Length: 461
Image (cartoon, rainbow, N blue to C red):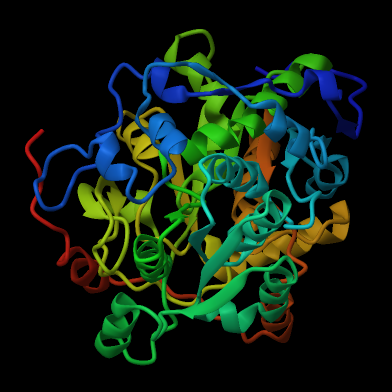
């Protein structure tokens, strides 16, 4: 239950000395581990040797390690983090007043860097390990552009080449995000493109498509494995990414300890799972160990509802079917999400680790339509002074709904959500909302069946 606190600062910062020195690996405390990545040809678990053909060697070790609870953060990465971390835990006093709720609302703000999002936490880490391995460069995909921007910054810092395949819809909707990537030296290509074999195949199969994260992943992987001295890096979904993003949750946990507050409800937007997994990591660890209990809520778009309407199956992470199989909540690798503005949430699947936690009933999931999410974003911007990213606005909407429930019941709950980044490159979306031309889309059961029709044969477990 909420603690009776009379004076809480607007912003709570950790000192540099209090910044995490280790990442937390939530899989170590899971009695039932996430299912392993599987080779689609043999239907056997992927070996380190197989994965090292695509990913950096040290990152492969992190991906496969489900027993070590804490992994040291190299000092070079902590030094990079110090440019923008620790990030603040903010008390949303003005939003509370607007809602006239007894709930206490907090948010962990990850937009205080040039990339405008939490993605830099893993981008810097993956670029560091690629440089240490002696690689020339890396390839990746990006949806809304936050991950591509973050990776281009990290590659510039560590002296690596960076090739980004940006989902075509976002490439067209967010040209200025693209230009930030180019400013940091990245080569940015709209996906699907005619520069890869898989891209040409997808353009032939889906003419006029706006693309998807699954398409862009396929192109980025092909570009990596066909270029000597390159590896592919991913901004979400994988265990290694959730590990790096645990700095968000570790800082949040420490900040709450400093102000003597225990959160009751923890809320994060969910696309592939990087932000949500990072925010909830230490809290979920306490829950798994039976030390404390929290309500943990994942929020996703109704147009791409992996948790709330997907199936828990082994599936390809990419549309071109060049990646390993992952057991996850999926809408099917053939699902083409509508071109909503929350491009970072337009992925057909969900992190295997988060999928397993959800399947065990350790967290909840809700979905919202686009216009109601932007209504929440507008309210937040007007009272809290930050224009939120469309992705983060899903978490804002859920936090507002929980606070309004507290108003009805009189309960004084502590609510915290992840504000993953800013929406200053999303002004086309805000323009459509303000003009009243924004539309909603909810896939039909037939749409979902069509996407799941491409799910491969299931391995024996």
